[in-house]
Structure formats: structure tokens, C-alpha cells
Amino acid sequence: MGIVDEFDHVAPRLRGKKEGTFAYFTVRDRWPKIVTSLVDQLTRKRDALIEKHGEDASADIADILEKFSRLRYEIMTDKPLINFPESGPDGKMWHDWMEELKTAVMPNDVEELTYFKGPWLFVECYLYRFIYSAFLATKKLADMDYFEDSKRKNFLDHLDQVEEGVAFLMKITAKDSPAHEMFGIHQIMKSSLWGNRADMSLTGGDDHTMKMSSIAASVQLKDYILIDDVNWLMVKVLAPLQANPQKLKNRRIDIVLDNAGVELCADLMMAEFFLARGFADKVVLHGKAIPWFVSDTTENDFNWTVDSLHLAGQQSAKLGEQIKKRVEKMEIIYKAGLFWISPHPYCDMQEKAPELYEELTTSSLVIFKGDLNYRKLVGDRDWDLNTSFKKAVRGFDPCPILALRTLKAETIAGLTDEVLNILLEKFDEDNSWMTSGEYAVCQLGGVPPIEE
Image (cartoon, rainbow, N blue to C red; front, side, top):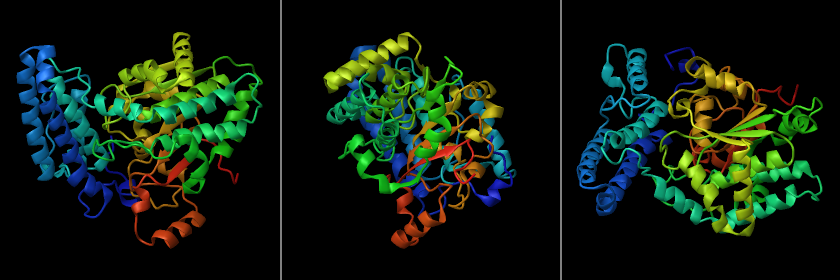
């Protein structure tokens, strides 16, 4: 995975050791805050968990709290990463990856793989896998989703916005609706894009309620999209799918999900739009197998959200029932492979998860949602900002791919000179635009660029 290569000189991997960077502030501030919030939650829920699971849960909680206390200390003092105390479905792989990275990065110094010095992407994935490990090693709490409360609250805090979005979806997918496909595509995909702002890992697990609905943002925030390839996506991918001259019945679109809550609702609307308007026969949703990055979608989140859509209103209730029917008919499928919770960049997928890569080659389009997926697409590296997206993804090309991402990390590729000049004039050397979540990209890969 990620052994040293020529790209480490062209585009170094982001690390937390460089003071002043967003990665540095993440390791120094956000990670300890996330661990502390979990400690607070377990302390607050202790009596209820013991009542539910019995006295064994008391020892489980004490064990987890002790591990989290040590974890917080080791993050803040930049200690080396240690192996997990359990094997789990991927425990041995993590052990091998850590040994490989130690050898590759600093052959004569195994202590180089620390929280600040290690590659940010690798260490951040390790952190969430360690948190999972602490619960997995217990007798009674191994199946607990310790991020569940915040994800569900995010959904419940945005019920009006969900109903507004679904009402719009129902209008443009009705049988008697005029076929303004380009308008509908822009609105639905931009709604999914801006739903990505509600990312609780960015706030250390705190609530993040969006002031503007995703539907409103899809119209009002167009100037904040630095790369917008949606028109080209329609020309090269979606229009041919909808025309379907070969009368195919296996047209497939994949969505690699990011956050649960209001963003997942927007993604479900996008899946329904593709099916209802005849762009696909099947939409495959890829989520996480375990609680991940505070707010990422698990299968339980998917099922709970579909079951809870009625809480948002009459139109949302209809969507919930429609999605259930599509799940029964396997027109919407949820999957959660282990590769999505690995630390690998996606250019390694063909080697590390060949079956998944081969499966994606059967798709007509894979949409990658959110910042973590984008970081994995471009290897979480410090690319020159005008580096082509094709170069940055380093050969990852199973089919056409689209990144829908609001920027929350200091890595991006594919910006034009015109956009760079605008950003330079507005921000000078201040990189806050890369991490604030105010700017976004709808970036297409795997098809010839517009100029060709």
C-alpha cells in the first residue's frame, strides 16, 4: 500500500507534523476532541448500558475508558501507533500495513509511524479503526454504534430541509413532469453536493445544522463550485444512458456514500432520480462496515433513515416507501466492503481489492461523495493545484467517475489558471478556502476532457 515512490517527491503525502496546516490542527485539536466526546458519551450512558446489557457492561465501559484515556495521551504526545488488541475481520491486514509503512517510510526508525509524523490519511483511518477495536474487544458493547446519536440528530435537525428536497424531487420525477433533464440533474446533484457540508467529523462530533437547505444551496452557491463538470457528465455519460439505444436492462450507477443524516437523504434522492428518470436500472450504494469518521453511513444508518423519512413529511414518507420497494426489487442495493474502511488510496484498489475494482468496471458511473473519498482518489497528497485530475488519481479508471466534494482538506487537483487567479486575488497565501467547506467541486474523470 503506499510504499515510497516517485510521487512522494512530486506530491508529498499530507502529514500532521507540519505546523500551521489543517492536518496539524486536526491531529492536535480535532482528534483529541472526538475521543473526549466518546468518553463523555460513555460516562453519560453508563447506567443505561448496564441496565440494558448487565454488569458485564460495567467492566466493558471501564476498559474502553482506560484505552481512550491512553489514546488521547498518545495522540497529544505523538507516540507510535500500536497494533490492535483484537484481530477483527481486518486486524491482520492492519498489522501488515503498519509494518509495511514503517519499513517503507523509515527503514531504520520504526518510531517514525506516529500520530503527527505518519501519513495523515493512514493515521486518521487507523484512529477510527482503533476506536472500533476498543468496542470490539468487549463482551457486551462490540456491536454498539457510538456515533449513532449524533447521526440521527443530524437527520432530525433537518426535517424541513429534507421535505423541501423530496417535494422538489417528486415534482421533477412525476409522470406528467416536463422533461427538463439538465435542470433536474443540476439541482439534484448540487443538492447532494452541498449536503456534504453537514460533516460532523469536521466539528469534532459537534452538531452541525445547515442554515440553508441543499436545494436552495444548489441555486445560490454556484459561484463557490471551483470545478463544475455536470454539463460534460450529461453529454458524455448520462444522456447516452438515458437514450439507451441498445435497450440495455443492466445500466448501473454506483454512489460511494459519505455522511449519514441530511446528506444521506440527498443521496437517496439522487438515486431515486436516476431510476425514475431512466438513467439507470440499478443504483448500488457503498457505505461503511463499521462506525467511521464520526458521521459516515453504515447499513443501520441506511435502514433507519429509510424507515424514518416519514418524520419529515408526506412527500418524504412516499419516498421512503418507494425506496423500500426498490430495495425489495434490488433496484437499490446497499453494500459495505472492507476496502472502504482501509487506509488505501483508490489507485491501489485494483491490487488490494481486485474483485471490487472488477465490479466497478461494470458500472456506467461511480459517484464519490465527500472529502474522505476525494482524499483517497488523489492519494491525500500535496499536488500542484493545476495538476490534472487524471494524473492525480494515478490510473484509477474502472469507469467514468465523478467526485462531489465540499473542500475540507488541503488537497485538490485540476484547477484552471482562471480559478487559481481568482482564489489568489481573494485569499493571497491563505489556504482557508481549502478547508472551510465553503467551496466545492463536481469533478469528472474517466472520460475525455472537454477540450478534446
